[in-house]
Length: 264
Image 1 (tube, helix red, strand yellow):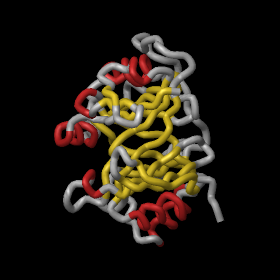
Image 2: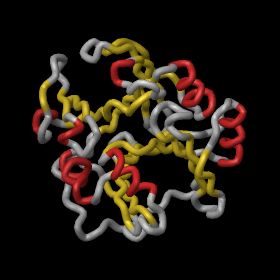
Image 3: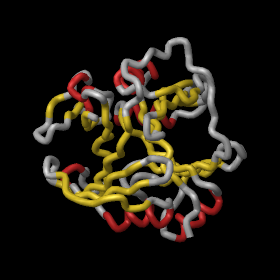
Image 4: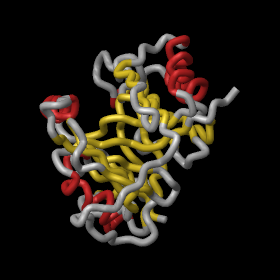
């Protein structure tokens, strides 16, 4: 029986929101959803794309109260931090993943408007998976420093590309426990990797690649890229053409996140 869980957003970490807005707001046209500049330990903000998928940007704030993001940036630098799934019941979701052999960490049930738990990358598919029960989507006005978009309408955030060491285990988590459905499968000849794509009613997509060359030794997986469709991929700063007509922005030119861009 499907529970109604869905993929909500990809969270990326950086030293400041302002580092990321030129790309995720300006060039990709993300529309403001919400933000909190005064959180304990970190400040989150979200923008939404044409297919309803979101990017959340995280910057450190008051790390003396919660230093997880500060430690992440000091250890790894800016880049992908987690993927978030909204679930109708966190207690039920925790029970389901525990039955499947996962060990949720950071369980917090104190706030009825936002309850959360996490699956550690070493226990899951190589990236932090956040499970969140949030009955109402929060919204807030954008900050005065939020820049204008350079494109209208926003780009489409097509999928999150994850390389996984164990495709069956990743499928169990995303399909059996978190309600994904297989939407396609094939081979990306450019990357020399087979994939299975999973989708949710929210518009979110994850493409699972069997590409061991992208995974560090001993790891369960790794995020490889975020794929967008834009009006003109060649107009994106630092975008380099690929052999199949797509463009790529290397992670070192995008605060740790590789982009693969197609032109609409």
